[in-house]
Image (cartoon, rainbow, N blue to C red; front, side, top):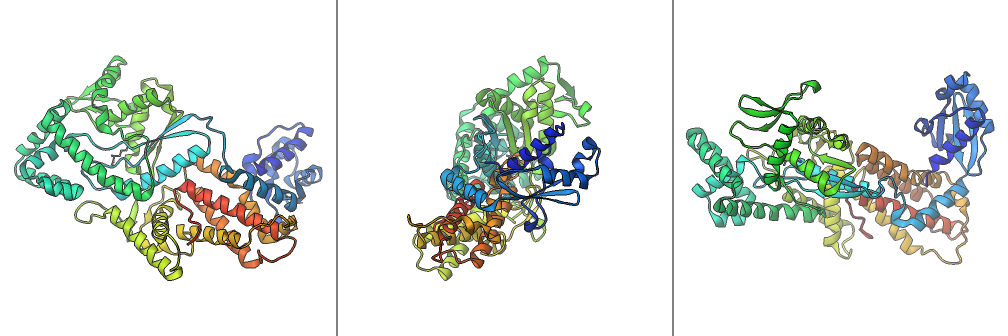
Length: 564
Ligand code: ARG
């Protein structure tokens, strides 16, 4: 249900009588103060068409617009302010939410079409970095939002499991490796081997050749190389899986770079057939001069393929396999040039769907203002971070509500939710400061605050079970704080659409905070359980709020416990 639409069509109706056709929806504003109205229309937008001063237009519109759901239309200067009929609209909003439940806000934009979402994509034998965490969390929320909008998301974990580094790792393992150690702490041990390889290679450059040789063997399917590689991959995945389990995130595909090993020759051939391939210093490239961009490297002088080659093969494979309507790549801003190049090469290959590909970049995770690094001993182990968040949440719960049932489960939802929400509450391109304390407070704009608000509302509902004989007097919605809450609830659909259009979950995060704050103000000012005629309507509003908050949290990837 689109309440903004009611106002848009009421304005259109009057404009039609004046013989004016104009898109106005994007100009509607939310007035600075709630008493002024629910929406405002700035009439300078029509000044040219109507050849009239905006405040005269405002006066004309205000006197001409009539709609049963609009209680008051008022011209103030060049603005027309619209106030909904609180009782009628409130009743409708609340009952629509109660009837639709978690489907409130569902949009049909996507018609079931597929959207591939390339997310997380950590590198085998390397630590799962903060950047990978951001990609995982943002990508997962986008997948939920896409689904809410009627698309069929396909979550692809494009693992970094191929490339010359695996030749080096195999060689290092054969020289210095120890099976037990790798099994005990796979990523730590493999990383140590990899670092040692580089240190020793400075003294003995022949090592590099050996590394390359082992990668060549791997590419050609040498059994020993393949067995080791598969083992490294499996052990690393086991470790990544622990993080995914904690986050509660699943993937539709783990087809990583290695999967494209036998799918690159055809791509290189196609580039050659289309006359796009050029030699440059012995390497093969696609020139992108016309885009003012450096060339895209397809094959190195030693014949090895590259990250970009695999991404081209992956794009073609995904189009063929999923026939996506859109393809999203949730990858840090450092790779912007890479994705621009990939998309442009596809364009030069004459694939009209190149325009449906989107790189969704995001900012860095900072600690004390500096980039959090997983390299050079400063290794931040993500699993430990999540465990620590869960422990802190556990302590909170222990001190606030020691008798809570399933404490462990709730602590997990709160701890992990805190980390996720902290990531998603800011526009994704912003850098964010990592601080467990800030994430885990129950006040301010945090995951725990939202979860706590939800649990509090659920507890009111448990206490005040709506009774059959409860009369539903919607006069309850004339209350200023009740209406503030309702006018937010009715905007859920609009916010979801906006998040989808901008590929940015933070709109939903901010909105959910707004709803929670409006609810807490309402709760602080009004005796919800008071036995009077309006009690039923108030309880309905509380229940509608829990539905919207829970659904907002779900879209972001957070759980909403019943009790905290
Ligand atoms: N593994 C890469 C990295 O850690 C990210 C891969 C992103 N996805 C892609 N299709 N290139 O930097």
